Image (tube, rainbow, N blue to C red; front, side):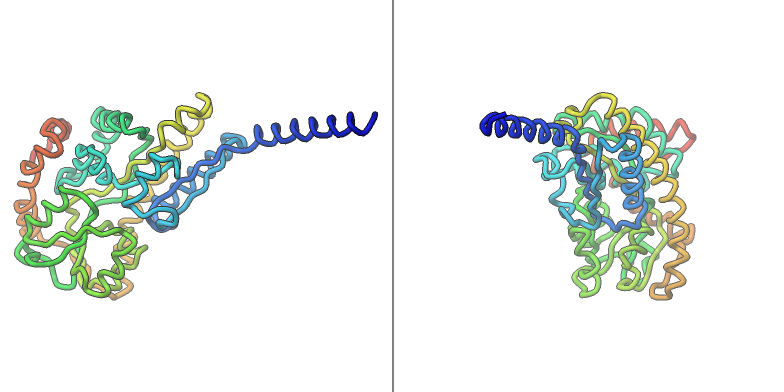
Amino acid sequence: MDRRTFLAASAAASLLSSRRSRAQAPIVIKFSHVVAGHTPKGRAAERFKTLAEQRSGGRVKVDVYPNSQLFKDGEELEALQLGGVQMLAPSTSKFGPLGLAQFELFDLPYIFPNRELLRRVTNGQVGKDLFQSLVGKGIIGLAYWDNGFKVMSANKPLHMPADYRGLKMRIKSSKVLGAQMRALGCQPQVMAFSEVYQAMQTGVVDGSENTLPNLWTQKFYEVQKYIALSYHGYDGYAVIVQKKFWDALPAELRATLGKAMQEATDFENELSLQESSEDVAKIKAASRAQVYELTAEEQAALRKALLPVHKQMESRIGKNWIEAVYKEAAATGFTY
């Protein structure tokens, strides 16, 4: 074999090897979220990673980025649409700025009196219809994950609605939550999750609403003196994937990932329920904040002050969406 033939053969072999290498390279899914890795959401993202990589036989590699390492909560949806990340688990209220205010249904105070109704909504037709509305935005909805039921915290005791007047209360970006806080006489302050601790520490905000896992893992109890176990609202996430990326995957791989996501979802929702009760005890044991239950009278007063937000938000969310939840509630024997 002369030198020219040898070089040509070597080049061809290198090209074939390169092509095989590229063909065998795993499909990378960047999964970004804004909370700590040891929260239920963080641990479920890792569970999905493990299951997806194992079940796909290494065809998929999931890189999880917790704690806003890649994008803050105000940036991540645009990043998904542009392909900078493939998978997210944003709070459901984050879809409002995309023109999908119906997802703010989940933010309505006292809309979910219990987890039974919540599951009827997320696992039923309402949940499916909500996910269908994402498709036009280039997004596929995969699952609903619980964060939990929210409590109120501040640097003063919060027992009756009058106690909230004048307080600067941090909220995530949601017109519904803004209306909720204004109904209590508060000044709602929209702020990225990653900025909340410092804002509480420096007095930029007086308080916030949050779930117990977030209060514990983000150590908000260190910079809040009082925590009222109001359980006045629900906070949850929608696990989503870029439609263009998802549609390009082979059908059998989508099925494999879908099953992995379902197992991760069951894990996350069970863990969220478990940790909510455990975190109450942890926060109390830390002895940094006073944690207390609302009396029946206090709970009734708060509920009375906040239920009008449902009617107020009909034009934004859509009366049909709210009535769909009311219909599911009636089927369980609950009335508002």
